[in-house]
Length: 252
Image 1 (spheres, rainbow, N blue to C red):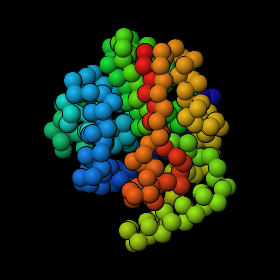
Image 2: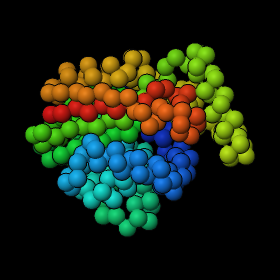
Image 3: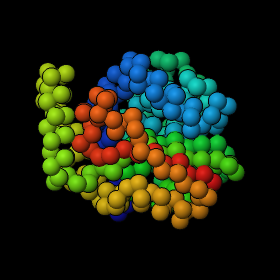
Image 4: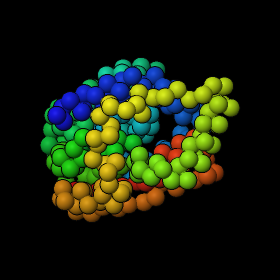
C-alpha cells in the first residue's frame, strides 16, 4: 500500500515539475533570495566543504546553492520530472554534482556513516514514513553529522479565517503578477495519495522533534523560519496560506 502511495505522490510531483521549475528560476534571479539562502546555509553548515545529501531536491535550487558554496553535493528526488529539471539546471550552472531518482525514505544507494549533512527543503511533509526515514538518515550520517529540515505545518487549519484571507491575497497577487488565475497543481488534486501522509495529521514541528529524538538523534533544535514567515517578503504573501514555516536541525 505504501509503495502505491509513493508512486501516486511522485507521479503528481512529476506532473508539477514544470511549475516548480519556473518558481526556482525566479528565485535564482532574485538576489535577495539567493543571498538569504547562501547566508543561511553558511550558518547551519559552516564554511568548510562537506559531503551533503540534498533529499527531495526538486528542480535543484538547494543543490545549486550548496554547490556554489563548494560543498560536495549528491541530490535525490523520487519524481522523474523533478530529476530531469534539476539535471538541466545543474548543467546550466556547470556544476559537478551527482543526481539520481530514488526513494527519500529508503535511500538505498547511500552508504552508512558517509555523509556530513542531509538537507531537505519542503520534503518531510511528503514522506510516507517519516519515522523510518529519520532512522535511515541518521544511519547515513558520520559521527557528529546533522540533518537540516526546512519545512512547514502544511495542509492543516485549512478551514480557518487566516487560511482563507491569505489564500485570497495569494490568488490576487498571482493574478496581478502572472496575468492569469493560478493553475491547480496535480499534488493539490484529491485522490493522489497526499491525504494519507502522516505529517499532515500532526502538529509540527513538535511531531518532527518527537520522531527525531525517537530515532536516536542526540539533540534537536527547532527555529521559526523568520525569512519565509515574514510579511516583509513577497514569498509570505504568495505562499503563507500553506502553513507556518520552520527549521529543524538534528545532530547525530
